[in-house]
Length: 235
Image (tube, rainbow, N blue to C red; front, side, top):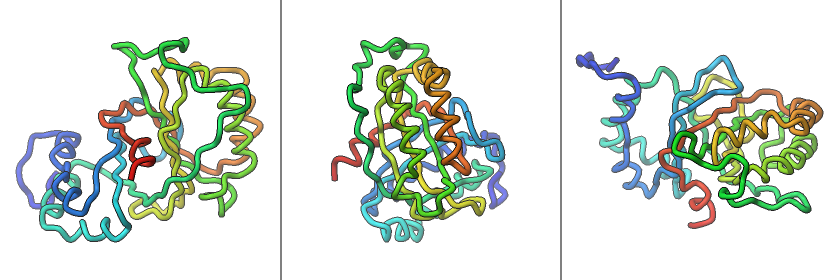
């Protein structure tokens, strides 16, 4: 529903498609590096996530500058009409953990559940708040222990770390604070579900992950655009 009262028969997702402020982003030196629809939401029931996007800005100021552009203000009418709610976070990349000794990434051609036409690559997005209030840049010990045990299973199923980020602030949200957002890629949904249901993963989750995390959203995303990892490693 448009605030100016214009008649429209398009859906909310179609209105959001019209938003696409590429000209405004380019004007301030920014670019989209990940975009996709949520295939399944696994954790977090109070807010339903439909789409996830990541934009790389050259500076914090460039994000503020974009808000004043007439082209952005005009295109934002479509976003306001299409989205029931939005969460916007300002984040910075953080160092990713090394693979556990004796475990290395596996080529997707050699995993038990490789990508297919019916089940292609997915990105698993974790939005995390830890019990430790200072945990944005320093991952809690229990979470590190969970990561290590989970990686021993995940790497064999084709895990690729696209990017982990510390949350500097929630610009638009529901009042909750978040510490980290993580983007982990798998060759297929079947590959990720094999990790989720692995007994050692379940044990590590109970012993460490649940101890470390105060609140979380976890979504499986089918990415239409994903150059997230390259955007971190390339200026």
